[in-house]
Length: 211
Length: 211
DNA sequence: ATTTTTGTTCTCTTTTTGCTCTCTTTTTTG
DNA sequence: CAAAAAAGAGAGCAAAAAGAGAACAAAAAT
Image (cartoon, each protein chain N blue to C red):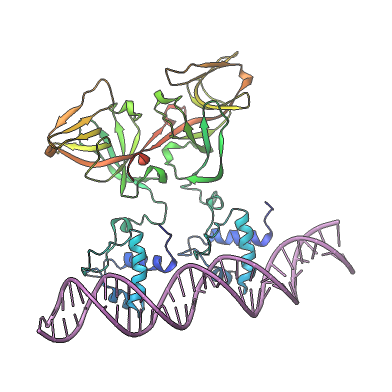
């Protein structure tokens, strides 16, 4: 997990800039030519470093596919402190209420994962005993699977989105609130689509103050 | 911890100003050229002084990375989206445990106030029913007064720091935990020094994941 | 089947870069 | 003015980084 060297960053930037210009992902030779290098081996050393940094997709075996960037690299999350998109509100029992114009929030490193994340605002009290209150913001790692016991954003029957604990068995999926006055719901696996997993939570006390 | 010399300040200013203009952190040679110097060694002397002053990031071994500013040095120049200092941990009944080298966390606008703020990490369960758990981070607005019902960082008898609800009357101050297994404590006004008021709270679920 | 392309691994050389040292020049200060 | 502090020039070192080029095997193209 070393920091990139200057040349590695240059090459990464070049790949990002010229992403559209290459009709197909460039081969090592093509990149060599574009960068004015004459040694494929030398370039390969740099690409390997970028693969280790998870900014370039590793090659599958010895397959020849060209050099393509990772999703992570495309977002430019390697260097600058980048905000996360605030995409909407989630209330138990309704689809996620999308926000009209998405804006970006600065989020501390420790509340993110290294995968793509986004921010939702929570409506309702279904997770109150887990310390997630009405109006809180949650940082969600975008992924379509989860481990039992994780808190997930789940879409039920393609219509209702909720934030709940998840327990999965081969024949059913339990979505469990953290609120004694609400009950867990059981669904068939095909009814439930995981949209992300909770990695961070934030609350503002500012609105309570007289500002 | 000496004061900076004139030239050192010039170089620091130059680094700050041109931070955006350099695509990558400048090397000693590049800085030399930009500053009109012809000796890398002389420049290095200044950079060393800036490293001692914790304004430039020290080099990791003999790694070549270029000259980059510390978070500390960056502060104040970039008025917009700026991190808050993470200054230590607060555990009920002990003084705030200061952190050795302060670093800065990106914090969403909504979790700050427009007054100076800092970040503490909470140790203990005294505010658990207010949704503030062990290990959570809290954003504190620096101020020495509070309104009843606010959550404050209070220093008792100049020795113990706690995070509690506050209720003040002319003759006594109540510090009230949000935990049924703990009791509120009453003090004389002169025993309690308010150090700040809670304006935001954050929690990471990342450590629970298998990373 | 044969040739070319492509990713990969080597070894070796050159360049860059942080760092130290000594000596000289300039600026500040009492 | 004289001593001290600060700034600079320049040489040299060791390690890191970058590059060249050869060789090889699997994949793709012919």
